[in-house]
Length: 185
Image (cartoon, rainbow, N blue to C red; front, side, top):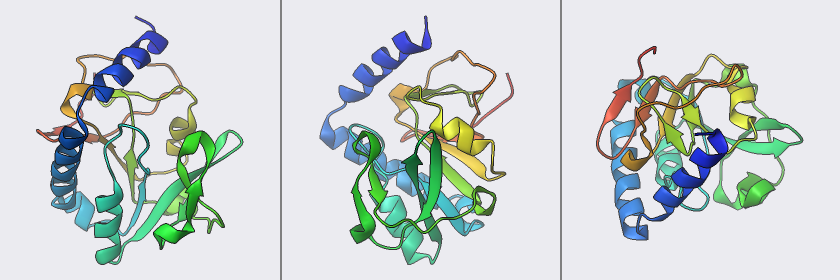
């Protein structure tokens, strides 16, 4: 199966989750994440902002602010993802692909990131990720040494995903049911 075919299937699968189920699962994913030592030990976190049926991340951002962490969010510029500090929801407006983005970005260097929360349509236990196909996160992840954690609903975990040379893996995946420490494979 091609990545494009997989994307359609994964989008449809995720969209079938009820809003209540997505919110309940997102709450559990947030709880699991914010209890990790790797969360507590990192002060500069990059978090994607939710669109459509993705894992809801607003509670993660709020928790990071309460803990005094620097919150960084992505902003698309051309073929790049810029890392922009976020200190208030008022800084955001719909941007590329409808994703909320900072209106007046304050840039953070990718090497300053300590934790990157990565979106995806699907993940596998080896940390392979199926993104939306534009390669934005893969290009960014090559520029940082931050811990990479994928956030996903359990229905987004597949046995094996195809991988290309430019793809970047995540090191952990958090679902509402478990935390997966990714293995090489």
